[in-house]
Image (tube, rainbow, N blue to C red):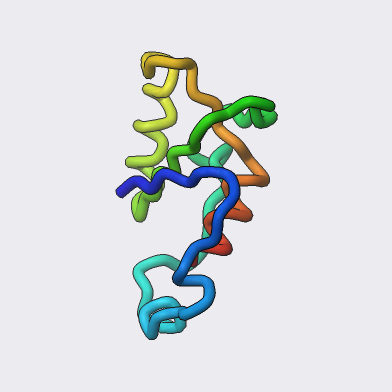
Length: 91
C-alpha cells in the first residue's frame, strides 16, 4: 500500500478521526524505523516535489523493498525521522 504525501495542505482525517483509527484491533504492534528494514536514511531534498509513503505490515517485505531501492528511477531517498513522524501521525 502506498500513499503520496505532498508538503503543505491538511489531511481531512486529522480533523475527523474514524473509529478505525482509534481501534485497539489494528494489525500492527509498533512502528519500525526504515533502518530496521535495511534502508539507508538520508536528509530530505530542499526542492522535493512529492513524497511516496510505502506501508508494510511485514518487516521482511520491507527489507526486500529496501534492498531494491537502488534500481528505482530518480534515486529515491529514505527519510528516517520524517518517516517515523509521518507514520505516527497517520496511524
